[in-house]
Length: 340
Image 1: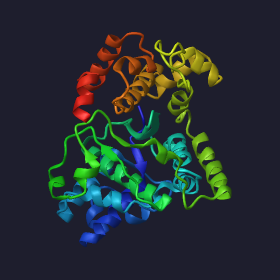
Image 2: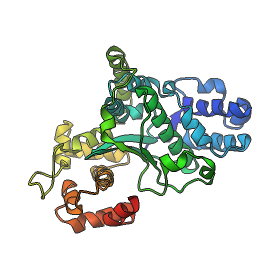
Image 3: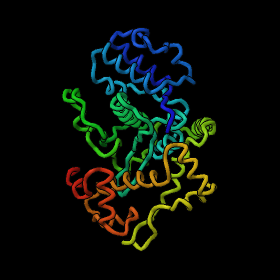
Image 4: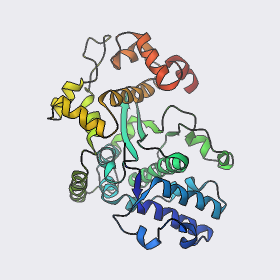
């Protein structure tokens, strides 16, 4: 299970946000043992439980239920440390997201990031790897809006897409005009969905020298976290690009646990043991990867369900249907109709 801690700088962002409503830092942080000065320490970490208390207190003192929206709109790249710097100086959105996926654990292991691409659609998936409890709505909405805002800043252009949340719509959104266009709720996953062609949009802040320096620092930070990035490396080794199913005559698009272990230069037993220590397994990662790819493939109305099943490694459509119902509570056909 991931350590339920987040960087202190993220809590400091909430402190600075509350200032817009004339809320003093000492009033907001009362009873938490935190101070504004302690949160400025780059190495400061705050438990999810404490962060939840701060956010609840911020809602109470500001009287503003939509703080998550404001938090996302004011997100700063500097809050994400060297990871933010690496993403900002990357050459394209694709490269920036690759950095986010590989090095997210250097910021927190509470929420992971994964990029999924199928056909003409792409998604940034935000994986909850620890229990967020009362912080969930604030954290997920703020993060998705913040990432979208940073993407527009990095590219210097307006980006189109949809933010899907796995929880019900907050009541306050009824008075927020833009939310109906960008935010959707009661969805199978927390993800940003957009046209895959956006992945190759260049960043206006691209800097080949700076990105190498930032990446090197991120590598050093990741190396200090024992096996923290292993699930991401498994996910990267899992997918066989260009793989198909029985309908194409090609191998399925996913490697076995033995093949993944060989690709990562560890024994199968060691891989299983290390994943178990992180609260996950090869099977869990495979199921989640299939689920996210299925959701994107169903966006393409021209793809028959049998072909989608084949691309995901299912030899028969009923097997895919059963798996999809287990993941989402509905069938692929019903999900496609609901999403239309």
